[in-house]
Length: 380
Ligand code: CUA
Image 1 (cartoon, helix red, strand yellow):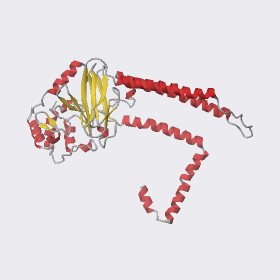
Image 2 (cartoon, helix red, strand yellow):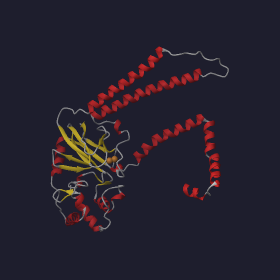
Image 3 (spheres, helix red, strand yellow):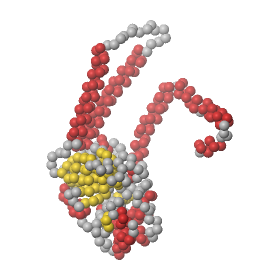
Image 4 (cartoon, protein in one colour):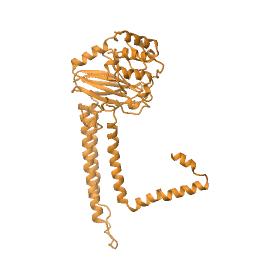
């Protein structure tokens, strides 16, 4: 709109005159209003900033997919692990300290401005040069405050980077564009988008990346940490409360970044072991003719180049599908786990997830897609 209007304006001198007229009428009068009413401007811009600051996270919260529950934007302030409690405690200490200092400075400043502003004709105020006691005070107070914050921070960093005593479990969390792979070195498990951990265990996440830099974070449970290629970054966390927690990639890593989510499921130990046994099973055999047809479509298409199904195919580019249907979602949270969504995903994954590296398969017939979806949904 602006471009086409601009193109309609004649070139050369006429354009310059028009520009000058525009700035005189528009920007100049706005600027005059700002100069004339600085208090109104300050008030209005303050209100607008406050509304903006509140509206952006609120809109992001409201616009979320109904089956994906990331928790409220303030999730890190509702900690569900000792590690996250320590981080949020530190946040509150620093926030309250900063608020006290801010209030003190603001009140002191407003008092001085209103009390000591001179009027026309007032005599010059007495000239003071230096005050050792005051200067010492305003050097020592920040030193003490910053030293306190520094010590509390170092203590928190040390605590959350030290594994607690007790049983432990290692899990590799590998970032891919754009999904998380989870491997359990102790068990023969390679899964995606969903990680299960036993309650009461010290979990040692080995955070790595397969391509670019990602960031691994479950806001209510653990510190944020970068996933770098060829690096093993450690996160220790002990989770006592069973529950389902949401996490995602927190570092922009390309077009599919916003759909790089995962679910972290904390379970009592016996339930966790049940999940482990189920995940260690070989892939389910087709039980109906529709599923058998779906399997033959899978094995005769390029699906096998990227996806592994134990005993069926060995691709290692995309997520392992051996127990696909046991997970909460497809596309790292971009679409729900059901046959209709799988069929639509195979036909055109871009409709769910921008930039996804899996190609679309528009040439599969409706029957083929249904058979493929029926087979994949049988992989519990
Ligand atoms: Cu991976 Cu953002």
